[in-house]
Length: 241
Image 1: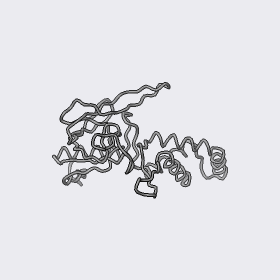
Image 2: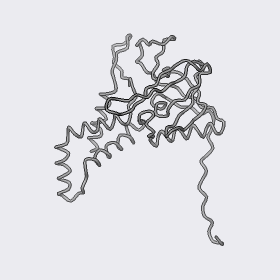
Image 3: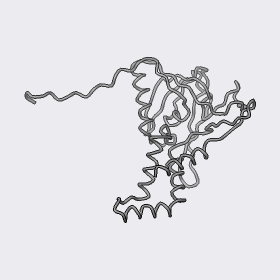
């Protein structure tokens, strides 16, 4: 199963990571053109398990007959998913506006909330969305993805929870544009959301859904030291209750 997890991670890289050759170089590099969501990982695992089902079922049957435990294909899927999410894909998040958040996502949200509650400035930088040397369409030569500018600094000024979703409030120092989410219903009835930048807030402030935010951020900086988390009080020994 360890090898299976490695194989599936290699398939994920092949599926989502593209190679390119910079104009001034003959050497190829790699970049991720779009976020890898947990739902993408689950689909890849399911496809790989279906492909290897005869071998896996025979292996599990052998374990069962040898008295080494009874394991189902669902448990295999959960093992591989957990292996990826605690290792090579530990920063993966759920799709935006799904209302589902990993422990990693909740931890980042609470860290931001705690910093803002203590008056500490919080800044983030966005990822590079296009490979170096590839021309972008932005007015200043930059690339945009889902309403954010690549390699750009934003201030984090607030957080919010609404309808089961968590949001981070950002401020663009260029003071232009806000982010708008549009609900899209697919032919099979499933729902997804797209985001884009629109004009309308000259202060450059807007809310961004947490998963969407984390998939586009390269680093988060808290300017100051967070106070230590409060320790649980220990029960006093002896005496009257």
